Length: 220
Image (cartoon, rainbow, N blue to C red; front, side, top):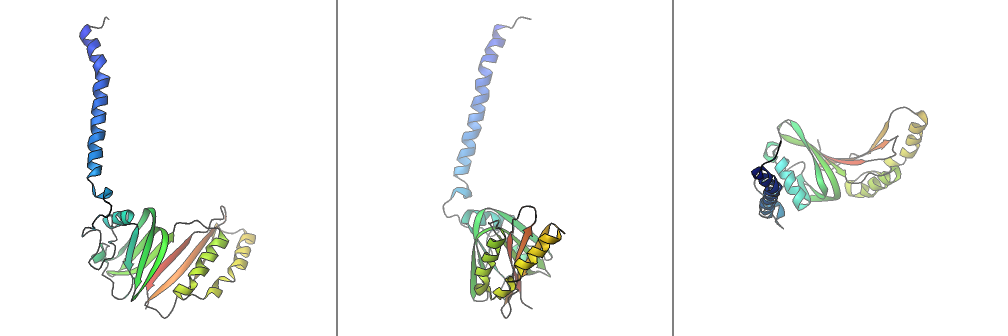
């Protein structure tokens, strides 16, 4: 069937029209992004991103702000806000994997502990109280590196570093036994403080990777 002159004309300009629509959509999206909160150099936190005491809201919106600012702030123990004031359920938990490594500032009484290169956080609430905050450093360490990381933190958190000494032998026994996929060990918790801090490492038999977590829990 022969194609009319009008049809040939439509087929000629149709791809160009589609391209123009696509370009227009990209331009509009770019302008919207340029005006968005995400591109501000120092964006101001909204009420659903930062709590009344300056802590990070433990919500999707709060974690969005953490991703931009690069700092997550949380108070554990006495003086901290209720779980619901932080955006958590009274009984439940909330986890976040950050888009880039962030600095964690954990307030405990009059002290503030700073941990860098944190990749994720899990907060747990019970009875409208924040009962634990677990931080994961953004480093998948081998066994020796994981031990060295925890040993370096021992003075700050009041851990007895000698707790780590038997772990090499225990890991050897685990590898010789061939039982199980992972070997888990911990140091702490610290004692005599407003919170208890525990460091945990998990050795994976298949890969040798040994990720580390640091958990803060109110004492008592």
